[in-house]
Amino acid sequence: MTTPSLREPELHTFENPLQAAQTLAHDVAQRLTAALQARGRATLAVSGGRSPGLLFDELSRSRLDWANVTITLVDERWVDPATGDSNERLVRDRLLTRHAAAATFVPLKTRTDHPAEAVAERNRALETVLAGADVIVLGMGEDGHTASLFPKAAGLAAALDPAATPSLAAIDPPVAPHARLGMNLAALLAAANVALLVQGTQKAAMLSGEARSSRTASPLPIDHLLQHRTRPLRMYWSP
Image (cartoon, rainbow, N blue to C red; front, side, top):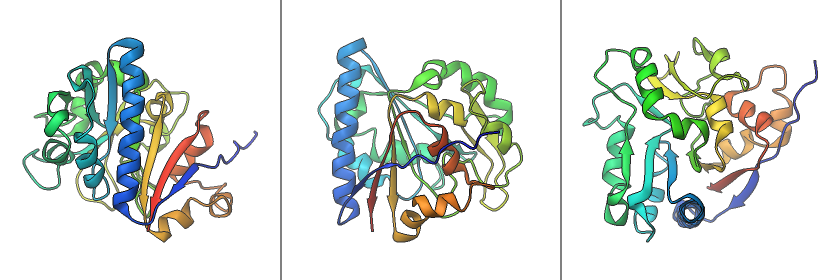
């Protein structure tokens, strides 16, 4: 079996997180505008966590046809959307404001007890996005997880199958709190544009070619995305 090549991300470096957020917001707005001009509609999927707050603030100020943009989440913790751990709450508080308040938001969280019970219904609700989002913005944890695809999680192998049908997957992280619902690797690969927003020297070192080459036998989830993506993944890094 041939080992997939380790593709280098298209790296953009900045002096601080605000500069990274401003540039990425401009780039996302441009790509959404291009999709709107081509088809009259556009789709954007974003991650939660600690990193994207500034990006959401900047992007919400962008003047574009938000009424024809659908926004959803790449992944979600299975918690009450009103709580601080909810990615939906972050999006509603920081992105769906100002001009972007006109966008349509499709949440991942439902009233089911476990995300596995919501997969089929949310797949139908997000069929167009899963088949190929115009823009996806990802983060990455220091353990190499992205989109709630955690190392050693049950069901991870199936979720990382690049030949699978683009879909949502229920994940129970072995170390992080809360069950999750998120896009599988095939859905991430189907996106027209993928950006990775990263802060800190440790994460940058993890993404270096040398570090990833040393993990060829046991790659991290982020490595799978880089190995199998046919279009460049743009990384926006700041210390």
